[in-house]
Image (cartoon, rainbow, N blue to C red; front, side, top):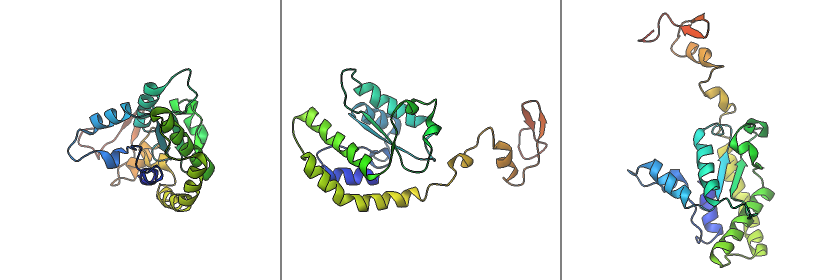
Length: 200
């Protein structure tokens, strides 16, 4: 949401940026709106942190934008997967995003993303929003505030996103801490609880 605000300003509102949390009208069927927005997108900025990097929607949305815009003969970047916290790149091994060059959030890399967006706008429309030098100067001007706002959001992400997810390795511990559930009895790969559930 912060990126959208600053990108609109940076590009004089000539480029449409779309974020589902802001741009889906109340009452709309959100899945349809998301798919339609993805299908008309020329690029995707994928915002990754430890709270969302395992979510299936990340890969789905990335795939829609990439598949729609991929051209073998083009050197134009389509997807910008940006890691916003200390999440290790190895966490993406074996995933679709693991095959892409992941970017760690920072001034130089964000400036490159901005330059690529500016370049694509020119290729698609034939018009120029900013010269490369002017864009660089404008970005330098907004960077301190943009960086500060994003850093404040990153600080709110739980330290260990994986620990908050119910998964094979922590399900017993999660239940143990929930309303004093009893210890389960294990039988092979089955856990049985004598109480705590309506259905045993």
